[in-house]
Length: 326
Image 1 (cartoon, rainbow, N blue to C red):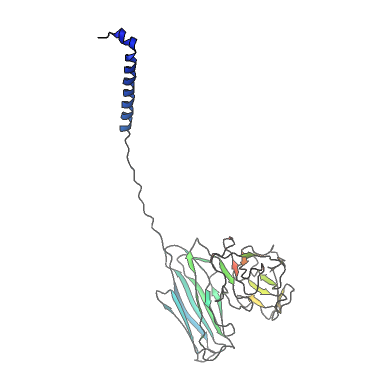
Image 2 (cartoon, helix red, strand yellow; image 1 turned 120 degrees about the vertical axis):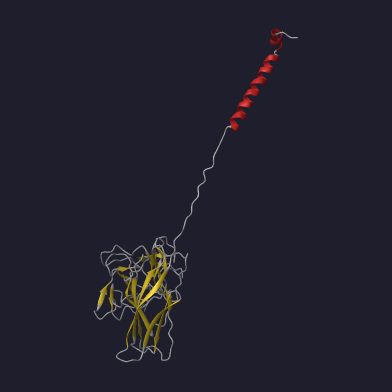
C-alpha cells in the first residue's frame, strides 16, 4: 500500500485533485441553474373603437310659384335618414325651390363634412343649383347640427315634359382625416355654387397633381381671392381670359366677356361692371397683396402637357403631398 509520500511522487493525487475540483465546479453550475426561479406577469387590455355616422334632418322647403298653385317642391328622408330625396313637380321656366336641411353627427367621434359632390347634373341651361346658405366647407361636426340650403332654379332652356335628374353625396369622415377637395371639374361656364364637381371628374385617388404657376399659356386662368386671405377658400372665384376663349387679357373680369369657371354665388358676373384679378395662376403674376398662387391649389394634368387646359380638374391639395387623396 502506497504511503502518502509515494503518492505525491507519482503525481496521481494531483489528477485526483483535478477531478475532484471539476466535479465541484459542475455541481456548482447545476446548483445555479436550478435556482433561477421566475414568474410571468400577464398584460391584458381591450381597445374599443368609436363610430362614424351621420344623418340628415329636414327643416322644410319653400318655392316661388309666382302666385300660382302649379309647381310642387318636396323633400323627404329615406332609409335611416341618411338619404335625402328632392322632387320638383310640374316645374317651368323661372320656377324656384329651396330645400332646408341639416347634417347631424350621430356617431361617437367628431367628423368633417364637406359640401355636396355631384355625380349627376342636368344641363346648366335647364336647371341650376346653388348653396345659398350652408355650413363652411370642411366643417368639423360634433353634436350640433349644421344647416344648409339647396336652391334649384328651372331655366329658360328647360324642355317640356323632361325629367332632369341630379345625384350626389355629402362626404363625412373622421375629424383627423381631411380630404383633398375638388374645386372645379367642368371648366368654363360652370355656374354651380358648391364644389363644382359634375359627373365628368377625371382625377382618381393616387393621381399626381401639378402646381401653378405653369408659365404663360392660352387659357388665362385667374383667381379672385374674395375673402382677401391669399389662401384658396371655397367661395373664391375663377375665370379665364386667354386667347383660347373670347376673353380680354387685362387682369379684370369683364361682365359678359370673360368666361366664368367658378362663381359660387353668382357675384362675379354682375351688372356692376368689372372685378380686378388677384392672381394669374398660370404666370404667377399678382395684382393685390398676395405673393402668388396658393401652393395648395393644384390641378390634374389629364393630357400631360404641363399646363392647365379647360375642363381639367382643379384640386385643393389639403395635405400638400402632390397626390390626390380624395
